[in-house]
Length: 216
Image (tube, rainbow, N blue to C red; front, top):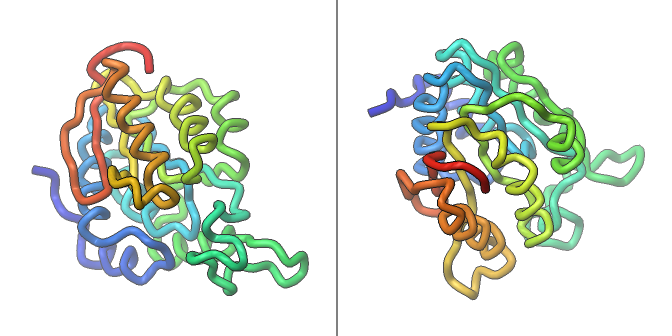
């Protein structure tokens, strides 16, 4: 059983702006600790303000590897003005667009984890196209449209090393959750049906799968 994060790390996670519940966060941390044993980087798609990045960075620090997090920092669909998850504090007043990068940097600084994280600022498919390193863990927590969820999967799942973990957040099987989690659910099913990944744990909307075969 993977060790739980230290109290100060858990406190930093719970204080950070974001949406991941603590139970799912603990499951993510446990997966990251396990994946860290492969000695490969841990990568997250969908940084927002760095709440879950804290947990990946802590696991990466313990394993002596690097955590990477990919986001354009302009917010996903449901975070735009007029939508349920919009936070006016994340809007850059100079241009009138969301910019979560400053909040993310403050989050990491407050947690003492800046040196263990590389922030990749850009759109996930563009970054994935130039990426060439095997990864111990890929955590997909980006946009919730089929277009974005599939692009994240197609861009990053091929880089999960043998025995590495693919973690998918906001997996909601019920049709009434079409906007919040049906696209991640369909990607989760796609990963299982590929034969490349085997499910190892379920914690609420968080699914952890291990690469046990080739392809995606």
